[in-house]
Length: 150
Image (cartoon, helix red, strand yellow):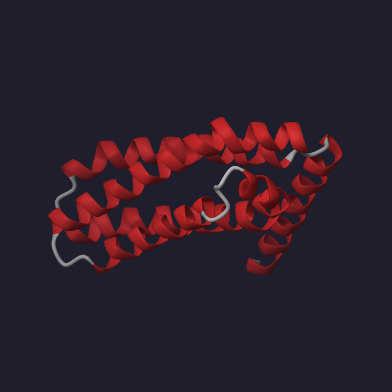
């Protein structure tokens, strides 16, 4: 399986999570519930962002540099992480809700750019063999982490 297929599949899961958060957060009644949703999102986003940064974006760095976007994708991952950290530090429900919904909106915007620009660019520039090798590396890393948790 190609890394682009893996990342797109993860994006599909995230879009469902984002839909749930957007539908649920306005009705949530406690700060702890919002923080819990933010924590779940952050725990899921962190390994996804790391995969993109380590396995996927690195081979395309030269392309991002040429289109003036070299720092953008890394910065957006950091912004999402920082926003999710702010959810955990929020001291009132209204702020926590708004901050979590902001993290979701930023994530959706970032995913949209990846799906429209980055993934198609990778498919054009990188060989199928390279994309498949990166997908295999992802599977090996995932299996290694699963074995460590047992």
